[in-house]
Image (cartoon, rainbow, N blue to C red; front, top):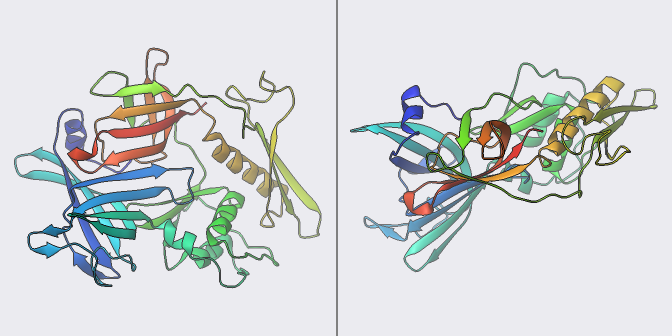
Length: 359
């Protein structure tokens, strides 16, 4: 969760005013410090390659200024322009606490009638669209390889808890730059996310069990509904990770899922249902075992009990946050936010979350 003061958090428990400020930048140049927004929302889905998407509706003419992107350096043109989005919580007369939601790359802007529709994506879209022109052969460490794949589009900030190691010789990445990043993170037993300040933060894979917010059905405008869906498709209860040691022999690590309705040794299947993962970055059994645990944790994100939540907008909530859900059937069930829709304006409707239980 984006950090908020104690006063702002208390305001969010009752009716409050939400403010919006959108800036447009091209490189280091500020093109517009207050883009007028009629409606807007941010959508996040952790299952997507680029999780974040922002949609805005802007008046074509406002205070004598045209917001139709008719020039290459217009604030809403899609030539590298980035939007800096900030939300403000009204604390009282003349007092607003501002927090930054993030930086977003304009993907398209289309004028139609009296308005301009703007689509923007998270900063990982820069890495996603920049396919490798020639095969990339790293020679340093995991961290230097990651930096070589994403910088200068994104600056990498590594958690000190991550243990860096050398990349084996003969590694070769073809074309898909973002897939190479994903493979490297799995092999490193790491997870990465783009921060509100626009950095790629890399840390050991871990799911927090400390909730940042308690959600209760039919309290404070919150409505929680179980999705009522269940499937065997894509379900696994084991991950087998394989690599190659320096002497050419195969190394293997296995992680088993012992919790939840699809756990090993449970009624789901009397036999293991594995997912296989291989990477030349794995050269020891310990590395393979750690990677197997990481991949299993990532795959389990999509297997917990799913709930749809409708609530008063909370500008600090982020994907990956842990919350508790209380309904007629569950009491303080720990869940993670897997998707969200955060309205930027009152006309954009309520906030919606997709959360899944941790077990």
